[in-house]
Length: 334
Length: 257
Image (cartoon, rainbow over all chains, first blue to last red; front, side, top):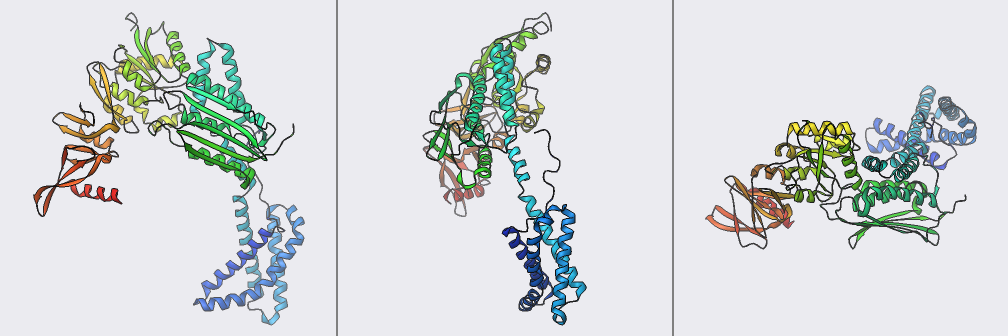
């Protein structure tokens, strides 16, 4: 990614052909009308009567507006946001005027007020839909994804650099390899996170990360890899496994004085891919706080990519802490 | 200081490469500041055990170590007759260091430069060993051990083993299931540090909350009864002062609830 885009997604009119949008418009207009009569009426019974009376007046232009917007949607969506919004408001006002004329002497309010109310309602509803879209926009999810990804612990970077510095004079070749590993790791950490990656690439990243940790921790870190059943062509979101291994070492090995056994097992079971990372559960005094955050982040990212089809579970049993991730098996080419 | 004997340094860090790096840097500054490494330890408990006999003048102390964090290590060592000066070392960023309230103390950030190391060593030598009060202020959490200094040795008593603390004149007696130890710290400061674990039952006594089995009547008038603390697995009773009783009564209710 070259730079941060200043305006991630320009404002866009809502998709008037989307059922959710139409339902939201209907509900919003009715809520507005209800609020208006409730404010004006003296008690609830009156308010209800007023509401029914008003509904008869505003529903025909409302439904006509929705229909017309449905038809005009492709053209409206091509307009810039603000002129599009003006067009929508004008369209709604015009339909309100037409409806006012059709009601003739039965119309409860004057034409000017009807036009004003219709335009105001259109503006409020458009504003609400804009806020709603902003809260759920893909740009926002993407930004959050990247924020989640950038959570490698700073102490890991500095300790790793320190370890490499210690190697440069005694073992320059190992120092070179360690810097290459660090470069690969940080390239992955800073990369575009929207696309899925192949499991083979994620495993390579795990191994690079593990090599750096091994350098720092030496014999204290004992890693067991069980990858024979790993479907290397499976697709998964980038960097879901590395933070888990980082957690396992940060919580299960670093704070302990002895040797810590960490297990990484990835396998395919039918149409599912199962990944499991295990570490020793250290006594409360030695353990570090703050594991739940990272897990929630990974869970959130799995949901963004796989929705309800992914599963993440952590448990403690027999003095071991384990995290298991299950995702649907989707093979990628390449 | 140029012609004197080399400065005796002790290195404490859980990562072997980090210790190697510090040795390398010490060698690099050797012509300006001659040093000799008198010992190394990979965790806090080993520093406490082995440093006192080493004659170390300066301790390069990693803050994030397994077994016991660097700040607690420094607090225990400060009880030695001739404690070393301390240079703390950390890989955390400035923000995390601020959280540690370490600003009051001197520290190096990993990876450290040779000239920074030299400056820190000179500064630590000039300042002398950090005082217990300053270390206590910098510590973000309660210690896990009490320590008893015996001439050139420090023995540690896990806080979790202590049943009660009783102040007597200059000293505080630590009572564990295995025996007694004397420490030289004011009870008020101990109450502040370990308030989560110990509760005051009397002007001169703090008792571990989880060691209290209950309370029994110990005489006194009908309308003003006196009470004793009954301890889990201990025959000894500890008197409750009239002032503390209302708070303790509530505590018992909480435990039942």
